[in-house]
Length: 199
Image 1 (tube, rainbow, N blue to C red):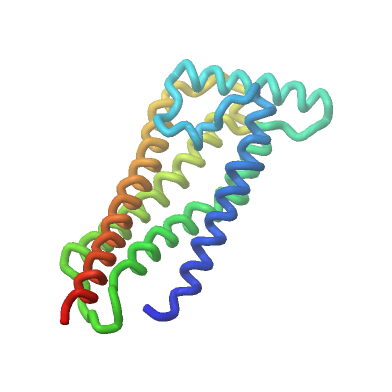
Image 2 (image 1 turned 30 degrees about the horizontal axis):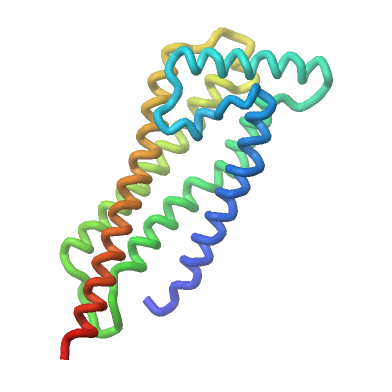
């Protein structure tokens, strides 16, 4: 437990990558499609009307980009999923597990964490894996719906609820894991205070 710096470094790099995606990449793509949000950041997902509007915006922008000989927003979206958003999910999943693990012990004098804390860590691990699966499949479905090749055809309406529930699942697993991590750390602080008070 003393050598946790690689885990904290991972958390820092994950945060930096997140900021890059949230401040640079995603807004840059959104600006090209009338400032519509990308599916990745719509917490409750797009309904059919929203997905159709997004598909139309991507399609119109791609036609303009091809005419101007420029890179389309759809291509940039696909590139993001193949680049930074390919690295981010496993980094975030590993960071969640690390944050749960780092909250296990109070001090060198405590050898066995409480049972509920150990159960909480196992749940964090399971949720991190669940998030990883949701995020990767969400990206694949979004690329199938809004990638350059998909814009040659009408929107696949059958995939809209699939993408929506994948997005909801992604955010739900992150939220529950974060709550559990907070509980682990709160428990860690309580045990630390109890040890200080004990003679």
